[in-house]
Length: 435
Ligand code: AVJ
Ligand code: FE
Image (cartoon, rainbow, N blue to C red; front, side, top):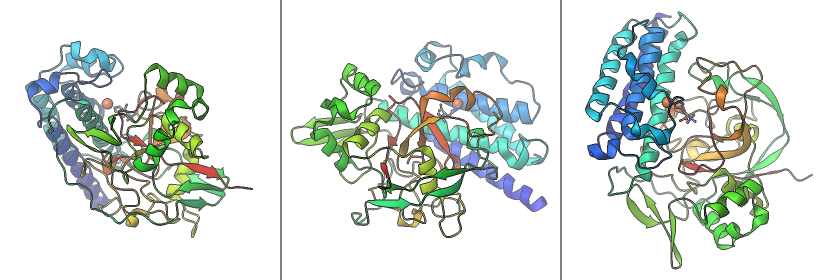
């Protein structure tokens, strides 16, 4: 137990430190006016995310775990996401950048002291360092949110990263057969899994085929150029109404230039890369493409079986490649690159059945609504997951290039409205096995 405690302390420290390095970069690579401005009504000013990160860390680590008094009780309301919708946040008396930085750093300093003496067995909140893991995941989720804000920001390039390693065009089979039968979905064992991933439970799945890789820009472009956005029968009725009302004719950030398609990415305009997974499509677009292709979106259960089922043992793995934590050869995660890798990359990250890029690159829309698993209990707060359950939100799986490994697992669930496309979202398609 002593050695376990040290390993947990190390893991918590490393996860928090990695998250803060990214937060610091994302909030220091632009000038002050770009931190306080609202770049899209869909997003908070970057300086709000920064202080909100500090405030959540103070609430859950210093106050809930450490039993300390509030450092600045008057600011709690400003950084409560449920008190103020994003569009309203720029008009709040937010901490200016220097104060927000100072506050987040002050909280972190005290958390470092707390972590030194932390007991990882005291309560459900502290068991296996859960609260520290939850807060590292929270910060990384906001680092992805802030990267979305950077993508929406107008103006010159502020962020750079090396491109993914070039890879030979993928020539393997286009789809993989996933066998029917029971499999274990969700987890009761993963110490830092969030409430909505729990508990582990058995589900029956009919045999189905799933795309070996995410749908590429080239494939999606064929849908666009086949008049996909002008053919009502491919669209869910609400999707059709939505794209017509908002004159949506291609993925967000695409622009037609004669015979070519261009896209703007982090301040740079480039030709749309044909081999990359399509990005910035909403659920309705993914759903319509799948219908056009004679296919459908996988359900969330199918996605997780494709990602975790090991036919040799019948066991559900933590990740497609096995139980080892993600390493660079497995998946494109952590904003190491600022784009998805070409379809077919990361053979070392394939599932036992040979499905690729389930983890990293692009969040994948599934057919499913965001619902609780049987036996769900909200923990540690209802506003993390429970208030979002229902038919308003669709589930996304697998993580994007923008999410860190600490907030990405075979069981990890993300959700959003079916009209959302500023997020790093793509998809793959499926079909039921012909009978
Ligand atoms: C799980 C990504 C939908 O950003 O709304 C951040 C994560 N929850 N702060 C979100 C979250 C509270 C959440 N998503
Ligand atoms: Fe948050």
